[in-house]
Length: 98
Image (tube, rainbow, N blue to C red; front, side, top):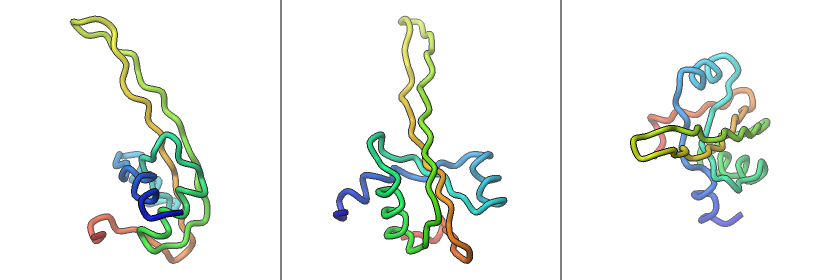
């Protein structure tokens, strides 16, 4: 996979209360990813960007909510998240990444 695609696959970490609990308990980290990203692409991107060993990747698609506004009905964007399990002894520190 070329270097440009690596930066387009991962959109950023998904920071939430649930993501923090999952990271502490089972060593999984949650990332927002591109809608067309595949599991092998996500695995390669995380391994190359953070220099860790990835054990598995689980992908989740979340449909955007329909919301009513003063101008009518609108829809939030769809989101694709990836739960990345790291091998034993590996960790990602988002504050230390360059």
